[in-house]
Structure formats: structure tokens, C-alpha cells
Image (tube, rainbow, N blue to C red; front, side, top):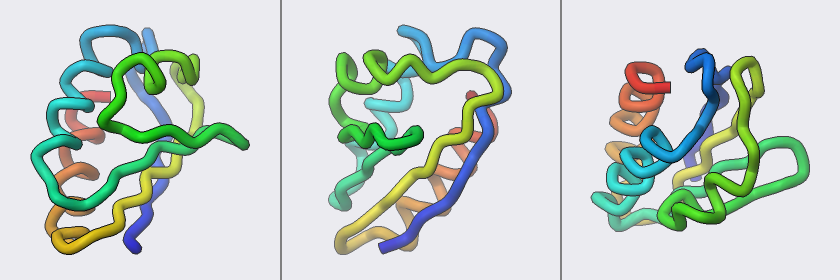
Amino acid sequence: MKTFEYVIADELGIHARPAGTLVKEAKKYESKVTIQKGEKEVDAAKLMALMGMGVKCGDKIVVKVEGADEEKAAQELEAFIKANL
């Protein structure tokens, strides 16, 4: 399993548009991608669960990637999140 942390820089947090693009990105990989904020952890491929976390600007998230292509998925997702969130 690969993990990385990120502090949300987008002033609106993970709202509808970035959540949708993140879900689309997470679904590209065979690996399971989960996003954790505090005690809450959700499947990054589920839009409503992701939006329901209420991630705001300045919140720290932990992204966990586990599966056959976890190395590639973790690197690409980290770059995607840094560029978009």
C-alpha cells in the first residue's frame, strides 16, 4: 500500500467539480483508492461519499492506494491532486 498526505489548497475545498474530476481520475486505476480526513475514510471512486466528507481549504487528507498498479497510481494521483486541489 502506498500513502501520501496533502493539505487542500483550493479555497473551496473538495466541492462538486474537483470531486468529480478526482473520482474520474481514481477510476482509471486497478488499485483501490481511499481518501481519509480525520476518522472518516471513503472510496475515492464514490462521488457522494467524497463530497460528504466536507473537506475544506486547509484540511489535511491522507490518500491510500492499494492494488496491482499502486506505485503508478499513487504517483499520478499525487501529481493530479497537487495540480487540482
